[in-house]
Amino acid sequence: MGLDQAVSPPGIVAGIGFRRATTGAEIVALLRRALSEAGLAPERLSALATAADRAGEPAIHEAAAAFGLVPAGVDAAALTAADARVVTRSSRIEASRGVGSVAEAAALACAGPEARLLLPRIASAGATCALAAPADRLP
Image (cartoon, rainbow, N blue to C red; front, side):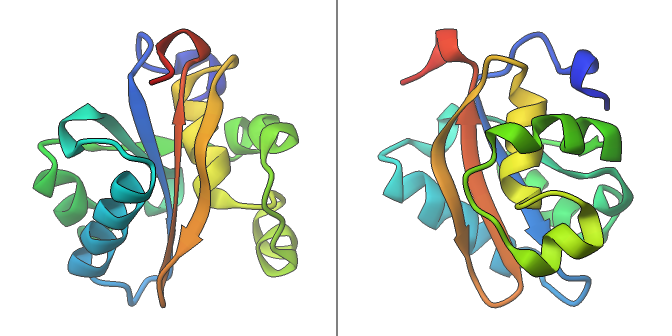
């Protein structure tokens, strides 16, 4: 999915970054924590986005299915385009992915060019999660 291919605008988008060994259960727990911290009901979640090369991983499919969703893969160009709106900077992720936060960039890219972060990146042992929404759909 490129930045210009964002779904007709989604509501709340969760961006997820994760290590290959991370379980679906860990991602689900982190998503629930993020929604709780943002004061949002799980039903408000309309998309789950991650880097395109990770969108086929079983753990992200398991996590998305727990919310009745299918993961959206965001290509590297769209992640990079969203990086100017990312507020969290990880030097390790910048070196490997070229963005400060995969979770924030994926959420922002999927939610569209006018999207804003509702919750900057939070982390568990093996995953990160950020929440974004189009400006006209902010809670």
